Image 1: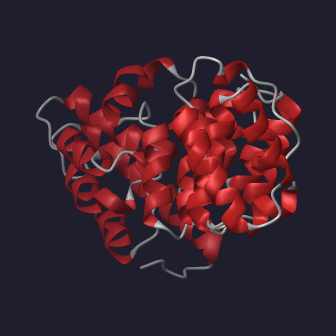
Image 2: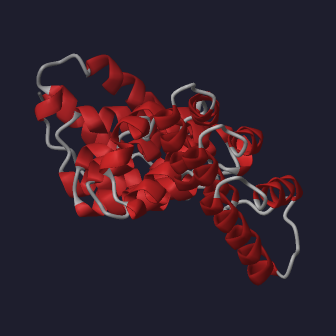
Length: 292
């Protein structure tokens, strides 16, 4: 125990990168000692930590997490590395912050979710929902638009339960507001969602077509499956044509306006009325300007 104690005291007093690096080597060799985790760590000079290279900072983070350093002191050291450390050290610290599980760590996770380093962002986003904070899901939705692919992919993994198949199964049990909230998220998270929606619109079963048309509206995906929706506007089933017209009313494009005009002469009075109402709504909404 005495040898370990001495090494820790020296680390605390280290004033140069070389001295600290040498002590880190020694401590890593002694980490297997069963007494290592039980040692009470001294306060480490922050200037020595900041002066370390990124690899050494990452090693220090690993050693601290394996030790019994006090919660507040350990979190303070990680915060120092995160705010003033080198890239490798910051990434190592970002990967362990969630283990502290308190409000201070939660705030640090949210702070890091906006970090300039995409690898740091990617490390922390997977832990945001674990905090149980009501801010977590809205923040993750924002990060679906992150400029870096690695962050967007990390968010999608975190939100992997938002699949088209799961949404399809529960769709009719959700109220309209939940259908829209969940649907737009599914569209953004599930890369196969639009393809699967198109498959449902092409299904021979009229009931599946009707549900798919409602899902397209909820997902804000009518433009993505425009051709399929227009095709259903010519279905032999009047109820399907009417539902297709309703969906077309959510997407003001030239092709859809043309399709709606054709439906104003539909054999079904209900379809005619729905088509005229959709066209009138376009005019009232944007004075006839098309979104193409």
